[in-house]
Length: 342
Length: 268
Image (cartoon, rainbow over all chains, first blue to last red; front, side):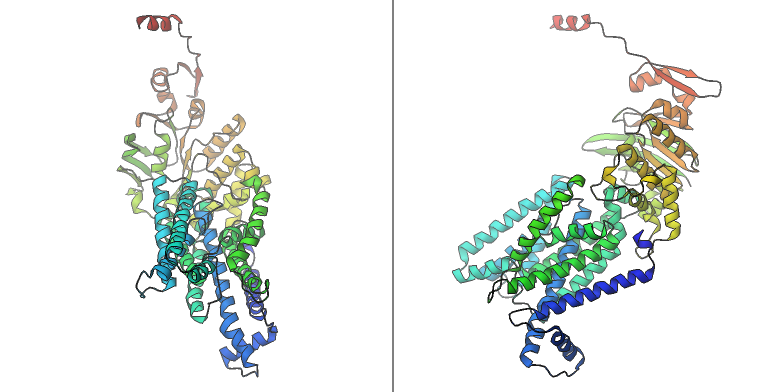
């Protein structure tokens, strides 16, 4: 029984996970077109946070602090938030295919962003992330409403999500084709596939609190999520206030997805694949599955970002391309191994 | 610890499923609910467990409506085993039983040795301790059903509601499971299909037909040939032994005279 292990061991595991995450962040900041040694990264952080006063090249320090570290932080937040959304949605909807991308939330966010950027909706009062956020909420509302009307079956929400994402992707293409200049269209395409290039510290101060809040809310509901193993009625008979748990968890996953998509663009496969990978490592109990998914998601996204910067010299690939290139085969592998259980 | 249904009404999709159902469950008794398919047994069980709310009437737990009790407080008093709850998660037999401890654990309460001991005992009670580490999807329907019962036992609620608990079980496990439930110091309400099992294990039996309770009493009183013919449409002999037990023997229906059909078609 894992949860019976002594407190010491669990604290140790949490500490190790934190170290691993810090190391990944360090590597994320060190690797790039100009490779910078890890100790310079550490010294930069010390200089900036505690005025340590290490003598460093101002250019290196600038690259690390102003560009790469903020980028790695946002990648980590985004990866863990999307992975957590995947865990929540898969458990609540009892469907192994649920994730924010498939449910059309990301597509809605794209339409929102495009509406602001190209059509100028909001007349300058709405920024592109705000547009994406609204789009995500609208899409999620529509998909949920359709799923509720279609019935309670666990596949209804997936079908509704497919309808929703088709609709919003079509709207996005329509707006881009109709109104955008060639240059705008290229920029939007790049953003749609997920892009961390423009990320700076203000984005961290948005992504980090949302990711941490999301993790805490999820952990608080870990036992409730376990209780959904045999469906909502079984959860209710185990003393779970089903409706309240639904509202809270769906709201937090809409918030996390909308925030991350508005900063980074729509990124597929993280929410879908990472929870399955984490289940293979730590099992199905949410007390472990949630933190494990968050950690693996964070590290996966940092790695994907590093790859997107170095895979073609002098050029940055959209990060969504990397996550899909690695995520799709990984998902295929998991599917074929889980065959007996599905 | 009393549970009673008062004038329950329930309809779904335009069809009335329960009409004015009242039922007092006596502490410590084994109350069986029998009735044909669609007579409202499952709906009554889900209203009594508080999973659904009646459209009229109320279910009272210790004299107060279920809606006044919190979900967790209800789960500490009433455990419910529904029909065929399934999962595709790769969960072990033991983990499925551990879920029964949920109503006793807050978000921050750590799992304790006492919880482990309760789960161990529940697994032994249903004779599944040797399968504790098996994955759910590798188990047979009967084994899964026994684990659902074990989960309800691990919940340690004084009232146990069972909706057709012996479905999927072979006859040996059907009887041993009912015996096991009977031996617990629990108040039990069980929807049952097999009339002989109801006769063997129940203190009282409620007979449902068309969304109403049409009879309620001891097996010997309730299980009468005339009533079983009216409710189930079967002809039976009821044998009684000296200890007050009764046994149902089903009679094969008389073959319908073939001429009946001919007459009908001639009339057309």
